[in-house]
Image (cartoon, rainbow, N blue to C red):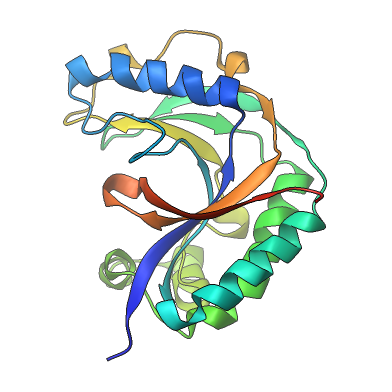
Length: 204
């Protein structure tokens, strides 16, 4: 059986936003945060494409991402609100601008064929109950959050239980930044980025 792994292609935030996210994530640990963002194991990120990818295609995947990055101009990511999902994920959500949507579309268009039809275990399970556009996206792209289902966000942590009262109260505008890098990471538990494969500067 061919070897594969789950990966996350992401926008890497600015150093300032990374520091703020790490501080906020650390402050949520006492409220039941299941992980704390940091530079080494749980890297701060805005996900664009989570997919199960054959390891034999990793070299080509890196070439594709380098080429996409070199042709992508920097753009601003504008936060719109803090959000806590019923299952405890605490995020800052970003406006889905044309630049952001186009970058996701381009990455998925180029990488989806290299996925060779593989699905993450989580998405195999989701397909049993998925309907409509979510089901279509998983079947076609191996990822549910595509196109109209794409909700760009930066996750601070996941709580053991829903606690809306601990969602950050600082201005979400402090989490705005201009994109300068995309990266690909091995995907960890709770949607975390656990190990860097490569990062690429935009417009280089």
